[in-house]
Length: 126
Image 1 (cartoon, one colour):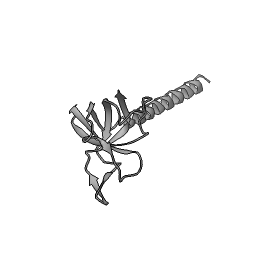
Image 2: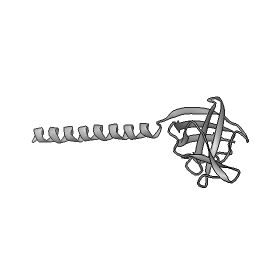
Image 3: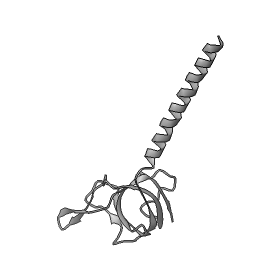
């Protein structure tokens, strides 16, 4: 009987460890990407992508990161939800550009190149 209890306890411990490892891996993946931070530069460096689907913005972040990124409105994970109109931003971006920024040039659309897309793990301040 004691051997069975030890065996059951070791199974429970093993399952707990496996579940914990999987949860930590999933948490680490949600923060994947390259880190960035700095002041958001105003127009003409940051603007709405007028020829892209609704809510896509081109955002240029100044020093210390100095990076140009795209952002889909409403994807910010934290409660302030004030991107792209914040003054400062800190977070992660995906170097693979998920949201393509297109603007009208005359009567046709032109792509504005960005270095990546801001992911949901971003914080901002006014």
